[in-house]
Image (cartoon, rainbow, N blue to C red; front, side):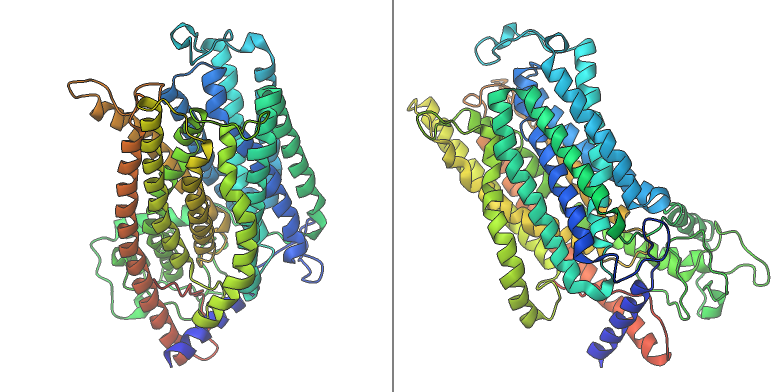
Length: 601
């Protein structure tokens, strides 16, 4: 009975989702035969591939440029890179908000893709003109004599860099959301396939950036490399525009933050009220004129409050029975429940922050590790250290199709879940593997340092392959699982914003990395020797291996924390779904607005 009732709720949730309005490029109702589907999503995947190609080539080799050309110290350069990448992902919130509230996905991508392109062009100009850079100097042999970029030169660099950050941050969440919008929730298998295809496009873009584009930067100069990034971004724009006639677009819903704020304000104002046992005392939308200004409030014949976050339930209490209360004093049951959904996913989001702190190390310190190793592959060819990050993506372009083609159908037969395993299970597996990436990095760095200091030997750069390989698989599981988990939450009209929240995990992770580097330096420098783990520009004098061990322990503790919150979410979700299922059995023709995730850890 429980299974059949849950299935009934799922079917009704799919019905409501399918009825959500979508339009074509002229604003007319979309035609399922002409608009949407994988054909339309392919254009968005093209933009995603070109955009990640452009920005990855900049971000992954930026630390080398900042040290060698702008003459920043190692710790300052690392923080510059992590702050830049962190800003990219925190600005995803702005992109998601503008898209869902005012512009829609397509126009948000179009506008900010041009902003990103202008940043790449300015970076290329700055790298090409000697008068916009400090005098050339070898930071390895003459580091104390090198002049750090400052004043107007630093201003041009940071303006260009943060134009790229603004554009990329606002484009990223909308690429994922707009591609997913080409499918309705009755196509959940195709939607799951799309999320895997999106990661495949991401992997291809990263692979080309970390091989071909980094090679161009290394051998032809950063000015040419930045120019190639600009060309890749221009190709992405052309690809996006080419699919205009095929897209199904979700119109913006008005401010998505106002109804959320209304729930908290109303609950605060009525904090001394007692929730009545009579549901007629609660505000449920039954009128023929739904509140069109409230994008997260939806009509439902039989709304029901859930026990989680009970303090918010007071926002639904009617204090004026025959009059009309302000929307800042009285909210609908559905409106409150939507805010509860948003709050319930915050702990899951928070558990991925440490994961992205580990990612930050692979784009900063691990690149510097590679620079201090033997990069020679043949007599005439040397591997650029930044290209090491291509190793997991070489593997992933084969693993992702195999995962989608073989593992998902196999797991689907066992679990009955359209994605094979639930998004929460996928995230958990990724977080667990991330710990072993840092263990591998710590062991390798200890061996590299011992060989360099005691034996005066330079290890091959391939020794650091395992840490990139393990984290590549970990990222495939965690990143896709998190995006799928957030997108499938039943928050109408907030898909871009929810996707943007997943990118904020990257942002907080990179900011946390900067904080940890500074904190570790301060704590470890307070001893009698005064030498911190990461204070020198020379890795042979630093203790990067100990910092990696610290991150490994932190990662494992974070995994245990995730298990707790994932279980908490699943238990709350299951109780809410069962409660709504019982209601749907009692009320004939009840169109419930629940879209259960069926996530169980």
